[in-house]
Image (cartoon, rainbow over the protein chains, first blue to last red):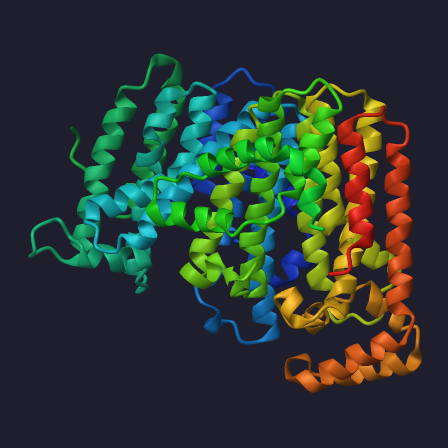
Length: 268
Length: 323
């Protein structure tokens, strides 16, 4: 994955904590459980580190939000048709992917009820509801423009974290969440493209360019990254003083990523 | 007599709940809304809302609070059904096309996730932490039960304990929780909450055992699916467990299901016929009756009330259910 240095000890500990909660031997035997998204984990940590919550609360907020994310991601693994499900193992994998997602959803409610944080259960449920509305939109609106398409996939990607940021009243970070995650996704697309892969997001983008026809597919992705980074940097520059350290961290990370991706963004 | 006759006087309250259920799933996306509504309109006994209502009426009854819980529990049940149809690759439920059949697996997954989210959004307007701890524990247990069911498929060596633990999670816990949540939001004492939970739990066990019996004793027409369908799917239920105590039957079963996907209708009919020659059905009814008696005993210390009498009548109805 393009992006963050995941060797950070705190992130590693959080990942272990989430894996520990998700642990289920039989599910793991059959289900191809998705990777924990380090970009989201990092943002969540940054959001919560800026609050006065206790470490215990922060860990539980991060764990439960990521459990919801894992639930949604696992359900995306369920094959659209059953014709691709032929063998007994494939059938079990499909069945258990449904149940694994349901299990992680149940765990999020269980953990938050355990710490008596019913309001966050409510907030995350509202996010899940909206994300599924967006997934339906994406599923049925094949003919949408590139801009609409990116807006929908970005909502699917970022709503959960935005809801948490708003819940803990970190409005500034909530505002950059979408831009940050979209940049990460586009950088990943660029990286995969350079490695010779053609990720689905790119396949879609290549046929939906809102830019001049003469641009190559690779140039479209580069342009999208540049435009997005310019907006993101602008938002980061408007961060309040109390977020100076986070701003510096995000800027550094972004600049490192852009350098390694050989992208030059004109400063606004 | 139909089960709904035993609580016919709750029609007005149940209509209010039906209306609230309808409102709860008014999604913005047309297909999501249609898929959710189609599921709702397919009907169902609404047995969980009935238990919430009745147990709620035993205390400081407030329809709004009770309605919130009843709607949420029914939504949770509905969400489970949509996902179950993906798991079972089922095309029909209650004689109507499933969400999976109409729109595909992906939409069924989104619909189930959406309905569960609506259930949680709705129930979290109730501030009582105990209610949430109880419900969340149950939701996790229900899923674990389904995982266990897949794990135990065609495992001929499982025992009575495995079966009882599975139906406890599959059916009994959500009914028990419906009763307890009705009691919690109506301010009943902890002892009363516990007794009503026990009532719901034992009723749920009995109900599922009878369902499992009916899978062999009812006709395909009555069931809306082939007789012995549970066994065909690899689910080893109580009648099969008892019948397997006869070595000849166990041998026949293992030979028939050596390659489950090739079992013919005639072979299945033969297995059912042989099962009925054993005392498995009778023994299964005895276990069901044992749970029913425990359910009635749990109610004995609850104060007299019309709602209590209805709970007794439901238990008796379930005990007599033969189709």
